[in-house]
Image 1 (cartoon, rainbow, N blue to C red):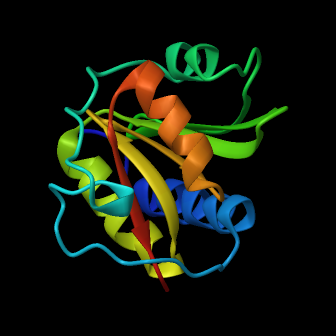
Image 2: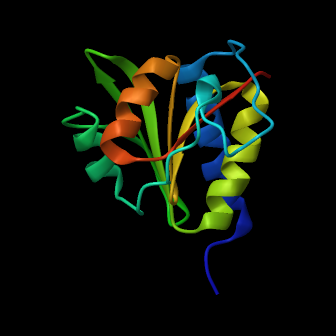
Length: 142
């Protein structure tokens, strides 16, 4: 049938821990309206499904350091002149939604697209990425 649920749980936990290290536990504004991006601007259309490598390249990361490579998700850390951020791709929309729900408990800034999330400390950097890859910015406090 597939991998045991323990593998999935381990992948999700590892991703959440890596995300906490990248985004820190800093606060931020919480938007209860998913149709509004950071600053109250209308949200952009989510970008199409993309691979980890495609997203990393479009954001200026030549070689992401892959942290998780599982059937359900792939996650890599990027370090560029714009800072450090995490790129995560998902095999399903449900997997992305579950991961994002858990990650938001830590707070942080997320650029959310179709079956992918880019997490980072600086919403301005995520906004510049949004212009290249699409997606909506979501900011939450722990």
